[in-house]
Length: 140
Image (cartoon, rainbow, N blue to C red; front, side):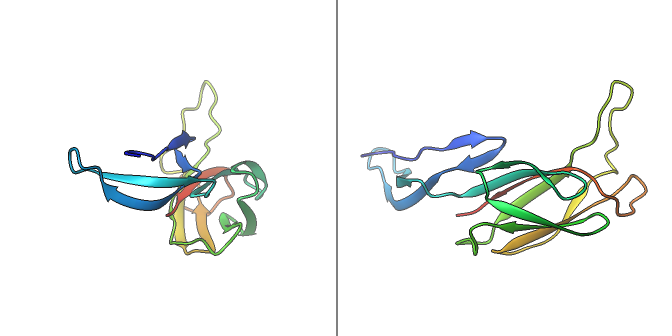
């Protein structure tokens, strides 16, 4: 039982493994982990500009509240998480053949804890605007 870590990657996030023990492998001194399948360690999603859920992974890992122009609250389910999550968010810019996006028209995380995280989306001028966004959060 040397190395039992299995890491799956889907849309940039780690999925479905819980470390239950960590030890040295005795061969080259590197850490190895014994894992248990089934523990969720991530949540990712696509939220449209009106606060609707376009996609989520795993299913039902969050719900959304769109509180005001450009402000979105993501609530993890179930919560609280076992640790503070590390989250990223970015705007889904509507690209056409004549429009390549605008890096100033984006999304920023405002706060995060073991229950939820908040983000704001804005237009190219910096003002809050309703925008589609995708996010990914991972935790231990």
